[in-house]
Length: 227
Image 1 (cartoon, one colour):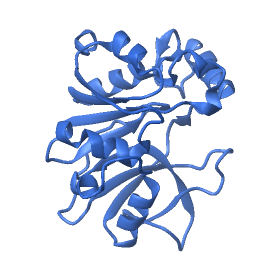
Image 2 (cartoon, helix red, strand yellow):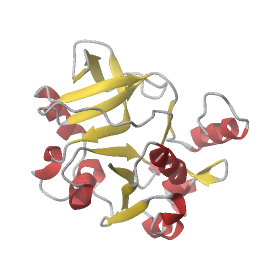
Image 3 (cartoon, one colour):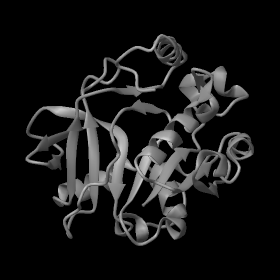
């Protein structure tokens, strides 16, 4: 199984913390966020990882190296200044992600989803993990009915930043900067996206305050915070 960790963003909402440190190397319990993510991927059986690099990416590569210390093999997809956004970054990394469905996970979330890969029907291009809407995103992103993701017609949930994708979803995209949302919306409109609702721990670590709160909870061994 192969997985990609998205780690190229500038982390504007995290400034000034990200002025000198890339967001994935900010720590919870003294451990960089990206190492927490790799540990969870390793526990789920993923050994071959791709990490895209952008803002201060050399620091991430220096910290992780080949990944051997963490029990995985890491390849780096180095992006140009300004990065390629999510879909563009995935498109660039396709040669390393293989021909089978692969997992993509945001490097700035905290979630106790088990990350076991779903079975994708032949016509399904993606399987998204949705979560309850946080206070900072009350309107949500997508609906979910009978295991299919929709754009309207019901209660909307928030996309967690965890998804499994067939490479065909990105293979025909022109290379370059490209956001993920329009790509997903087109596939959803065609009825080709499945999904599930994760009802346990999910945190979007988008601001210094949220990072500090998570760090405090982690150090106290809070039961809702996965170690």
